Amino acid sequence: MKSWIEISSTKLVENLRAVQSVAGTSVETLAVVKANGYGHDATVIAPVLESGGARWLGVTDVEEGARVRQILGHGGTRILVMCGMDLSDAPQIVAHGLTPIVWTPEHIGAMERAARGVGHRASVHLEIDTGMSRQGIAIGTELDKVLERLAASRWVSCEGVMTHLACAESAPGTPGSAVTAAQRKRFAAALEQVTAAGIKPELIHMGNTSAVDEGSTMKWIRDAAKKLGARAMVRTGLGLYGDTLSLEGEATAALHPRLSPVLTWKTRIIGLRDIPAGATVGYGATFTAQKPMRLALLPVGYADGFRREASSGVGNGWVMLAGRQAKVIGRVSMNLTVVDITGRKNIAMGDEVVLLGEGVTADDHARWCHTIPYEILCGLRGHVHLA
Image (cartoon, rainbow, N blue to C red; front, side):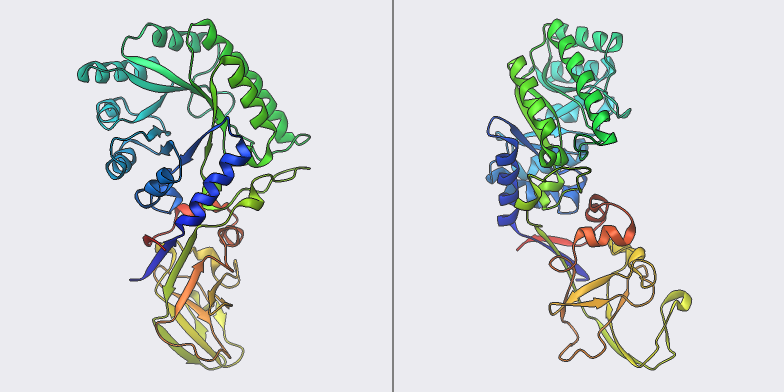
């Protein structure tokens, strides 16, 4: 086995409960397991989250939703398809008991036909575009058309109304907070349109992990939901897995200190080598030994998610070996990486190496690559199991 990923079910549930506690007891928590659980394997972690009390899970698309539904069965856990829907997806959405996000009359028509075909109503969540310009319907005339279609439908019910924040990590007083304020204003106007159309959603949601961590928007959404007689919901992904984005501005993180990473990515040493001063290492001969060195070879590279930007002289990445850093030497290649173990005793073939975990975090990897931890976690390749 080239590499494997160990998941702590205990830490995963503790993180879920931390989110629930910080968001508030009146707020429903949707546990986001899309993109294969951010690299944690949705089919492995979904049952853990369900047993830990998550009543809603969020998936990427109907295929991922079907896999998660097969693992969980048709119990009480709800599954929201978060990344839109193709009209041809509607029959499978209904067959697997999934709930789609919709924002066009065509979406609603497809869901009506699928629901009518099986003889029972289908629930949907309506997304409002308040400033992301991705998914969602704009407020005003276009929204009125969608609401009219929903209000008249015999087969589709609008269970939730939602939007998505562009700058949730921005605290009051920052430029991003002005964007959030504008989004809240637009969402409030949309909710007035929803009410005027005679639709009474059960759930209202717009917050993610950063919104829970920053805090101010959560109070707003709780108040907005209460005004409508609905329940607020938060969609949290990264927080479940033990991380958050850094907050911008003067803000105290409410969630981050209570989280623990749940994933450890490991491999084993498959080669040991001594090289003399002057020897070069890896493609492009970008590293030249200034003294005799001892190197260890690892069977992972950028094809497995250990990014090329971790190469020495670029991101200067490292791994953890026996509790100490071992720095990457030369370029990370497709399936192999070399690390420095010069002067280290008792290092042997087959020894475990931590690629991501204690001592080398997703934030470390993200810093080497000038990206965010989301991208790092989603790019991991390895067999996943509960530790």
